Image 1 (cartoon, rainbow, N blue to C red):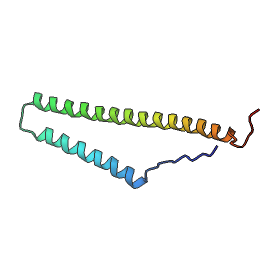
Image 2: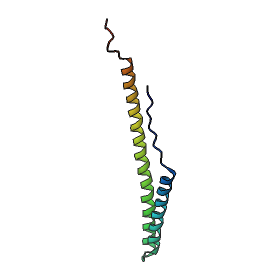
Image 3: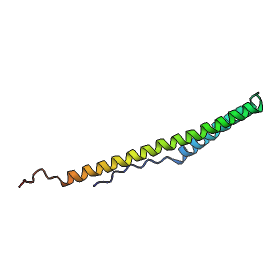
Image 4: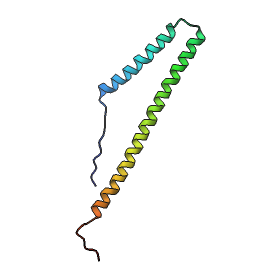
Amino acid sequence: MSESQVKQQNTGAYHTQAVASFAIALAAVSVGVYQLEASGWVRAFLAVSVLYLTTSAFTLAKVVRDRQETDRIVSRVDQARLEKLLAEHDPFQQKL
């Protein structure tokens, strides 16, 4: 069987950019909620909403990643079975 596993790795710069982008976006929303001319209860509600949205986004990203990894593993198992069948099959073998 041939192991043709493709490893996808992000560069350090891409990871840094993603983290910085997330931090800037969260900080901008936090400053916007803090500077909003509304009562404390409204600002608190918006702040909790932003935190809930953030945790939900992380959870969704993890679920999508886990589903893709599961599909990749199932695909690799199916591919290994097919390769085994092809390796065992000899089209020139005479049947007795």
